[in-house]
Figure 1 (spheres, rainbow, N blue to C red):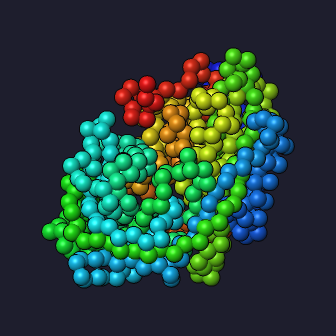
Figure 2 (figure 1 turned 120 degrees about the vertical axis):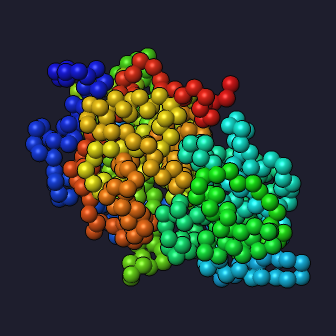
Figure 3 (figure 1 turned 90 degrees about the horizontal axis):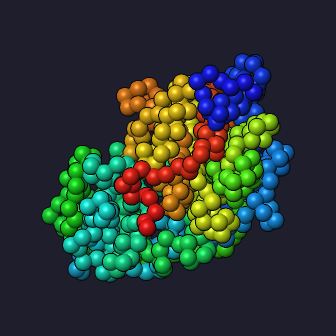
Length: 535
């Protein structure tokens, strides 16, 4: 291949192969779903026949077989003799709201709360059968001593249920705040002796209306069967409160949820205080064990010295299965979330495998299970023994990139925490794509998809999404999509998608992965990043 003017080897290789994805030997990029190989994968994976790809169901297993078949056709190698499928042991927990109860207790006075209206019980952690404990509000619930911020300091939390509000102070980045919430809040709470955690949502950060959240709460949750990989060391009470009913928790505190919400919306620090109420709960739940698989294939690297290192290209296969019907439709197809990301993984794997030139490092294509249940498949892989420690140098993850408008901007929550930002900008400069900041950092996108499992193990990792700026038409399209289709049956095959934009996005992903695989050195964390491994 002729060297492209102004580009180094890795950029030229990535862009040249990527242009083959988008243009097919010089032809115009497909403009319709019917002409798109990328959409063909989505059409199968998000079809009604697969029943929403819930882990542990035949629909998920058929989807996994489809991905494995495409890996085989592309010539990807199994990671080892165990093959492409990497089983993950899970526990499914179904919380039975009709047999559960929650109440606020003030001395002899008991105020029952209505499940679904006032709050929803969590199902991603083992719930205790019964609990009664005082409530204490601890602000954002963030424990970040390295950044000089600790909401737990100065509070006696032993035997208490913590109440926290989403968000964080404005002097901390969105990645730092959401990373601490996901990885540090529970361990800090357990060390302090807390027995539960209640989250107060803020309307500003909610991307799913409360009514639909209540429908989703009826779905079973899951957690990893291996105790060493579980977030909590034992049963812990968890719940989420409806913002419209949150004042009930503050009635005896001398404070109001309104004042807390005003501080949270302004990203101001919030001091904690006792709520002077206890919570009494009885939680009925059913559990069962199941196994679901990650699917992993490898494109071996060309450099004998670097082939034992891996750049990962990943997405998640699972969605929500069959649930409460909305407008008569009960199949939660997950076309954009995340059949679209899996389709990108498959197309990048196909076109890179077909190319004559191979990247220097190996590229590991991974499609994970149980992301929707708390990043479970990716965590099992990141913290398991499938690969030697340090073998993965970066994860390029796709989760719901949303090709709903022309691809001229991209955002990657947390990208500035590592040298991946420079690589992202370099690929963007070659393709006319601008890297923009996370426009809504308090949505915690940085921690809500599989790349965060690798961040937690010290691997620089990002999730790639179509970028937009606040106050633009693209922002409205994105907000409307989340409000109407995110985690709803309407995320199906009958929705508008910009196929040409999706092809450009796939080209970007491919060039980005190749650039990382061909680089002389590994990506590294930015100086002072709290995500860098501790010495």
